[in-house]
Length: 204
Image (tube, rainbow, N blue to C red; front, side, top):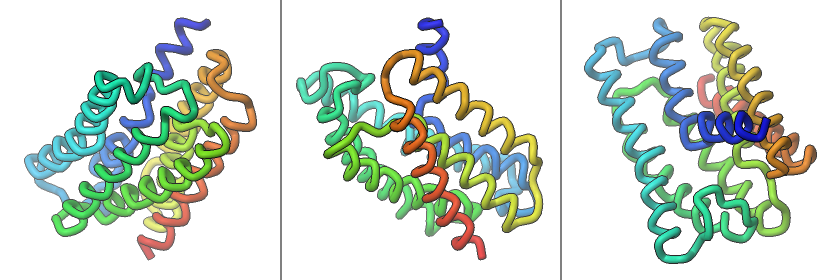
């Protein structure tokens, strides 16, 4: 069970969520997407992969080499502050670039929700360890639900899959003793609430 928990925690890492949310919009909300050209879709996804996955990972590994953190898993509560802050800065730069480009509005709004969620997570982390995995996956669930409600389109099974994965990730974090149930539930509630509000009112 421990191996499976480690596997799912890595496979569904928080850094992948922005890209997954964008793929959901670009491929499963066709009438809403402004990126009908497949080449443009690829450019958007590559840019997001670089900005929201590659650069934060490079930042974490640099901090590991500098001794700022003791592990890439960042299990120590205090060690999470600098990686969170640097990820927020990177996401803000990505938001600034994408908001001026021809991309579905959902994507920059989801990035904005991620920034707000990370800021709140950083503030909470100063006193209490909250689950970053569940903040991210709660955000995906909230963002997809808001898009389904506002746009009145999109496959409900996509939202069901997001909730299922969130449950798997939450269970994995508990099995690894990485978090208490309260930290897992709080993380999901925070991410869900922030992304739902940002996407719901942003797409009005």
